[in-house]
Image 1 (cartoon, rainbow, N blue to C red):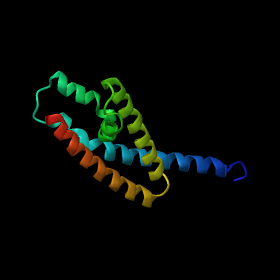
Image 2 (image 1 turned 180 degrees about the horizontal axis):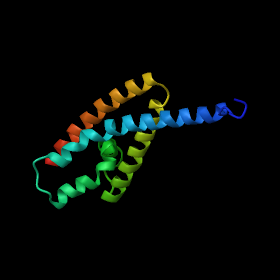
Image 3 (image 1 turned 90 degrees about the horizontal axis):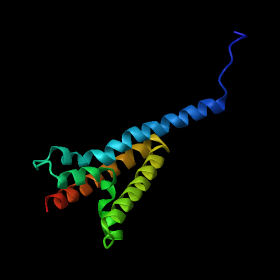
Length: 128
């Protein structure tokens, strides 16, 4: 056993950290975006209006904060604001979930609840 070398501890730590980040990403992305799946299955014609909402899907988790903060601006500024706020939201949630398993469970449950409520409001806005 003289020829076998053990991996350095920093490599193990890096692999463990990468695994935590991937696990938190795999849990939080569905919690954030799956409540908006109604957009694909709702009984509404596939018109340009619906495609506009499908294009907004990456930013939909930040729909109402963006409306509150940037409600008076043009559509392009609102879309960019939604994208930036959604990216900040997702990266913060992934970071918090990567801290430990307890954080992962708690934050994922909170995010799923808030995303479901936001999705319900977005569904009503879609129907208007």
